[in-house]
Image (cartoon, rainbow, N blue to C red):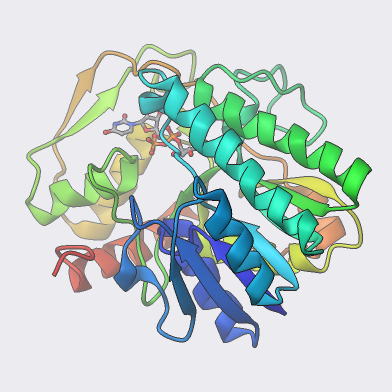
Length: 323
Ligand code: UFG
């Protein structure tokens, strides 16, 4: 297929672009480079610099591209930031996304794979989380993604836009070429690896008084190559649907730090800090539907392998994408 990848210069978008190209698809990356990096765009892809806020540009790209499908990664995605600046999240993730789906409908590109999130569930009443679990976000980031899932539902009903909403749990790891490099970095694994690499003194554990086995938050860390596989499979899904993407294994912040100590051989000092606003205690996926309907077969089932790939990328790219 000829695929438009919005946000293809970001962490997950860059890995999916590489994966699509490796599997014979052609890709045009559309990215504002506000948080993405030009060097994170696979050299085999076309690149268009642009922002989804620019409606005219989005329509122009869609008109000229002759795309078969769209992958939509472009978004603001930090839980903590969304609790401070909710407007940024609703503008970026809802209003700007509308420009994309309006253009898709206008030019008949009626197949979209959307980056949704476990954060749409909030503090769910069942664990692991199924697609049928009640969605009740506890932060504006999750709410903005849930709004867009609902927009897709109605664009499907009214305009026939087929969608797959992929709710990622905690994306982690690196491909051979591309890895995680946010600025500023707020995510757990890259920060831990900064400590191991000597560019940060310690990791702060945000809360050890949660109702979890060791008091720290539990998450389901899923490798970006497994996410990429799900995106490619979702292009061929026969009908619209929602899929939770995780391993089904929950690991606490403390367990991740311990695993990283083993992988890196560094003591990784940790200190306990207060809870971070908007963080649920547990997020673990039940991905049965993705396995059954999409034929998804995640390959990275344990956190050590995920951390190893991230550590390898970090050692090979000590400054991330900075020249
Ligand atoms: N954490 C720390 N110290 C840090 C950084 C994070 O203790 O320095 C903790 C957080 O409090 C949380 C866990 O590590 O409990 C994971 O935090 P991340 O910031 O790495 O990831 P989040 O769970 O906040 O969010 C990520 C994505 C979201 C997605 C969510 C789904 O950034 O886009 O996973 O689970 F919605």
